[in-house]
Amino acid sequence: MGKLTTHVLDTAHGRPGARIGIELYRLDGDTRRLITKAITNDDGRCDKPLLEGDALIPAEYELVFHAGDYFAALGVNLPQPRFVDRVVLRFGIADAGAHYHVPLLVSPWAYSTYRGS
Image (cartoon, rainbow, N blue to C red; front, side, top):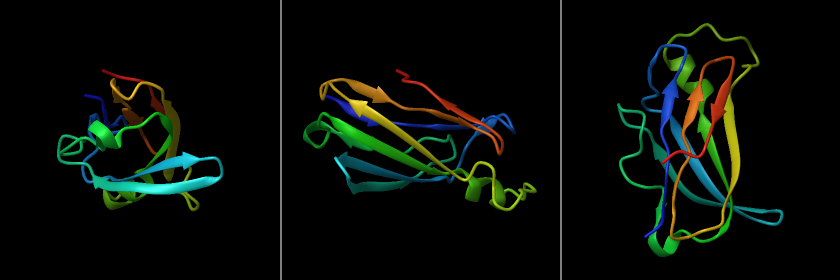
């Protein structure tokens, strides 16, 4: 059974990104549909997969991470406007039976991602 999971690592502080708001959208041409919202737990992960089973279909998706709000809540002195604020990751799912893990490594100044396992 396929599923989509994520986690966030705060590379500025060397720890999981806890309590970061996440939104997941499915894209269909110019239409962007909100599928779910989540907040990372103390380990920087969501308590359950963002999508799984029949809900996971081949399509283009966007994950939106509210990283700027996370760093502001920690008291990090951020410029206005924030250099890294909402991190938007657009990716495709081709195999609905596979596990897609999309981690985010983030600081107030940079971010990266990859397809994890």
